[in-house]
Length: 131
Image (cartoon, rainbow, N blue to C red; front, side, top):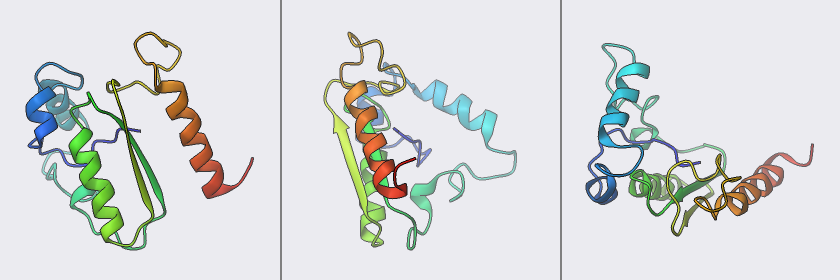
């Protein structure tokens, strides 16, 4: 669900949305400072998986709203996975913002959240089988 995979904040979606949408550049920088250990590059593969080697990874479903600053890096991640031979699906949900899946009960502001959550559950059941 709308992962942070680059930390460069240099895509078109960051340029378009990074000052007015969540997560803003300022918020994302705070997250990087809080979670990336001092002395570790914020672009290290274990911190920013877009910059990793992707061969042999399990299948992935990447879900992101079209109004999320992370949109383009998530699209790039899906392409990088597929280029490495990983089965990867990337879905962009029109009119949705960051957080729309976990706040799916607020249907007025997150109209695609419940559908995306259901799609995520179906993907996981397909990958791991029923509980």
